[in-house]
Amino acid sequence: MPLRFDFSAERILVVAAHPDDAELLVGGSLARARADGAQVGIAICCRGEKGQASVPDEDLAATRRAEAEAAASLLEADLYFGDVADGTLTDETA
Image (cartoon, rainbow, N blue to C red; front, side, top):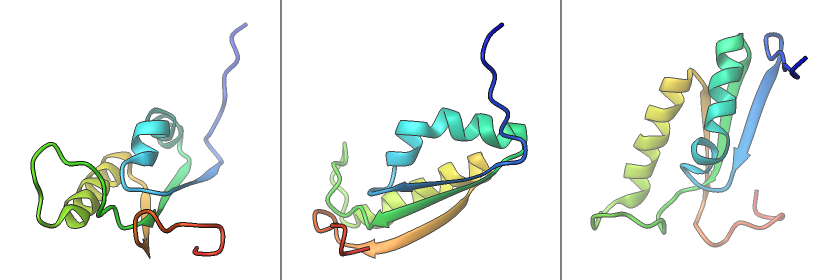
């Protein structure tokens, strides 16, 4: 018998350093958990201003924030943002 997780009564919070980390690393699991009825949240610690854009972007942090908001909307997840500069997150920063 295959192993089947049941997320129906769970509350899940993913804490990620940068915008897009949660979606890239565990987006499928979050979607599955939400589909099962779990409450889902994503906490992003850094602003995302040093990420790499395929096209030059004068306000990369705002673009990445908008992308994170769109992904959270699709996942029906609560979204929380920190305000730590990229490259400066430590265990004492957050």
